[in-house]
Amino acid sequence: MTVAGAEVAAGAEVAAGDLGGKVVLVTGGASGIGAGIARVMAGRGARVAVGDLDGAAAAATAAGLPGAGPGGAGAGLGVRLDVTSREVTDRAVTEVEQRLGPVDVLVNNAGVSSVSPFGDISDTDWDRLMAVNLRGVLIVTQRVLPAMRRRRAGRIISISSMAGKEGLPNLAHYCATKFGVIGLTQSLAKEVAADNVTANVVCPGVVRTPLWDDPDTGILRQLDGENGWQAFLAGIPLGRPQTAEDIGHACAYLASDLAANITGEALNVSGGQQMH
Image (tube, rainbow, N blue to C red; front, side):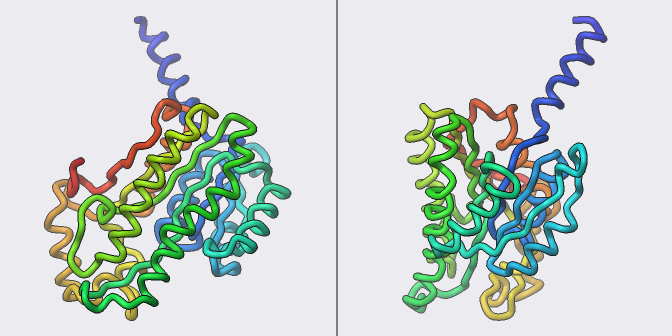
């Protein structure tokens, strides 16, 4: 192949990874990993809706997204979204559809955590994690999926965790939800493949977010604080924690035409800390 031909091929690949014109909904998008995903998607030219239980925070995050597309097509929309409520979810998605257009890419990112020895897991904590981390994926996906199937185009990307592939002490209830996200996604991928809709999972490794630091529910609360954090970092072959944008780039790839033949996968973004 000539040098000129190689340049054309490279240019075509870049274009295939572009998200210009696509409408992306990120749940739990006001902060942490969700905000990083929203920034990356908007930077690729997508029209991004940031959904969050805190509607004001969602609007603030959306207002700060880069307008990468022509005429600011990458500019965002913030909506209040409670993934545990079908009624609130329907209102939020309807607003997105009316203001931005049909959802092309759904990123199920909303999640909560809790640290507790197995014998101390309460029904309240169990139900809360199941409602947000697992049933929330079901509710929002069921709302956007019919239109994707009718259009014969769509991407469902759900955020699990390394803890969705390997059980960890004091996180049995959290692990159960994250394992569940992977199983749900694999089943969904097989059901909707004939409609040209893909469903995949991204499994973050160690990203320093409120899920780690929250004084009441954060993972580090019972893992020796900063010493626990450093212990986690020591197990990462690439030598650094992941960033929210690292997760965003993985999601952007799965949302793009470059990943058109990938479905039912659970992609680790862990710096090599988990390899399977």
